[in-house]
Length: 120
Image 1 (cartoon, rainbow, N blue to C red):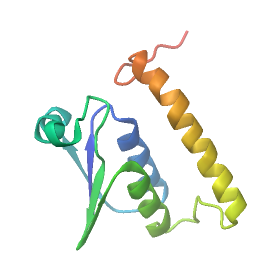
Image 2: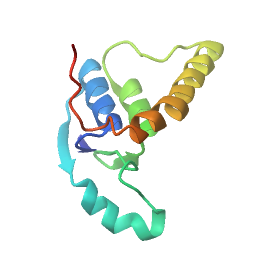
Image 3: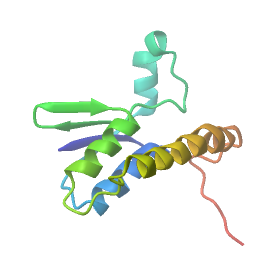
Image 4: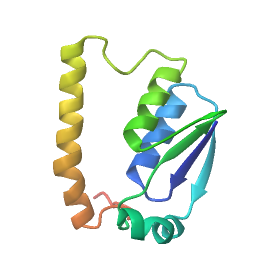
């Protein structure tokens, strides 16, 4: 299994962490976000914060953080991180989407990605 990631990308970090927590064996390939940007910018109108995480597992490939994280969650050997009850799962996705929509843009606007945070 091969996971294609980008440096300083939050979704890449989440996928690697989840894969390790789920006891999956995978190789990480660090792709160049600038190269990706130049290849797809005319078609997809990507900017620096829009990178496409993808995974190749035998004859199966998928891309996008939600798709890769869901695949890792179900495929892994540890207990699932997703609740089996529909209401709990819906509530979990609600909070994830809310944080993604509200918190991530603030981090990007404040240029917090890719910089080391110093704690006092």
